[in-house]
Length: 198
Image 1: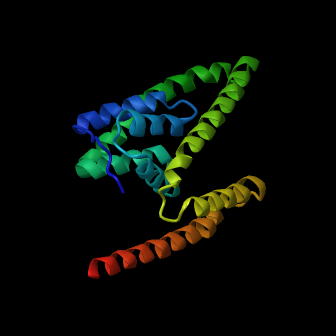
Image 2: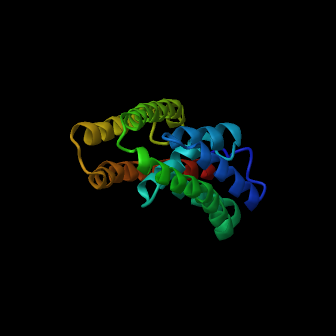
Image 3: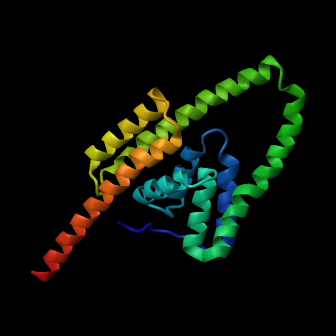
């Protein structure tokens, strides 16, 4: 896999970058994270982002927090992970506490309810657009684009139509995908070994 062209300059860079990222993440954080880390900062390739996001998603806790810990840890170890985590949480915590205090006074009004419904539609659109943008990264996946599309379709059916619990989907479809990828990567490794011997 191709390495990303850039990397964070320091722990302070991690902290400030993740603070800025967190402050943009209203409603549809996936779109913001992908744009900031892959397209603007270029700390990750699209393929790395898809793989790391998949890992972050199956770990307990918020996906983007898990991703920040992974990126910080990759470049600066534990102190980098903590700097990225602090960036993700410090400013948003203050803002959320202030908004919660203000929202408590207007939560039952029609205007507040309408605003929340509107933001829900925008968040869904952002997530869908990012998913479509990331499909191109699956083309370089070792399992092949066809298998990835089948797995994505099975996951959609299981979650959206059959309403399976997430744990079942992760264990069933996710486990099957992991086994298939392990098998494919094992074959590729054998082919490389065979080519280097001849």
